[in-house]
Length: 394
Image (cartoon, rainbow, N blue to C red; front, top):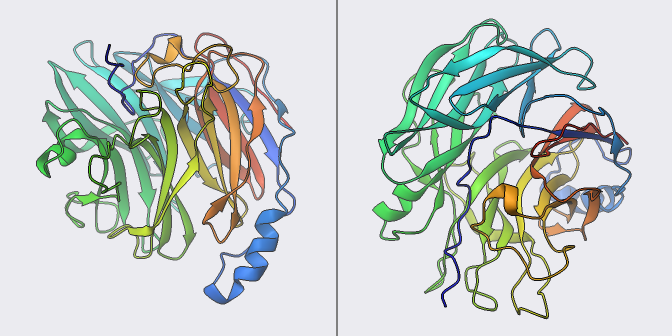
């Protein structure tokens, strides 16, 4: 019997969305991005990063999923898909509690998902990116608020409508001010001769306005070995210094273990602001152990990356490697999968990674952890708890 086809980043919308927020302080991170001649000091800074120590911050209540940003007045803001609606949530107490604050979009003919907001520093402008599914067609849409998320207007369409999947947009502002959007793209892989694969695509603007054509359509690096399966998604992007970037993604094993392709977490770097990607710096951030009973590998999936205090890169992710019995298949629905949340960080020059530490293991029905730095070295992680609401704190 053939195992189910693996996938990355096809996500279902839910009316009932939940979240856990976990906060932790990192006291040992230095304040400056490294120059090449500073590699020895960088290694010391990264190796000193403490692990573990996450505890409850908010006991229950609704909140955004995966992505939040800070408004010009200091409030935190984020969105969540409620199926045919995108709700907005804000926090006036640095994520200890949240309240509903209107909606970005509401259309009974459209299924919304993968909501992501980014505030533009020094302005009251916030962009909101999300995927749409209507009449069997996918698209990536951008809306904009010019008053800190109080009201929203249509801004642009990045791609679509298309019949092949696009989703999980991630908005990133380059050091020169250009706004970029990274997203999952089956069309790009198919156009370049790999139907059935999924790559990360990037499109960008000059500044924050205009068409998404300033960079063309960039394909973020993928495994080019003959026969390798590439299905990558759920990108997050961090700035390592100037135009040196890292994108962290959910992927699958390029070659099966025990007859199946498990989810793994990959990363790759760019030296020129995302225009090209250095395949010599493509790394496996984390892959789980192999189950001796089934011969299949356990999964590591839906990562979220952040640069902590201008020091190391930290990544939170889901894994089923603690479950009894065989691994989940990588194409199972999120609510059927087992997820404890783990955390790893870079250790040397943003190119090697630590052993994992636990963030949340009390329940196994979780999804989409999301990291956010509330203040210098003060990081929270949001965890969609699939029907329950929690907040955790160090």
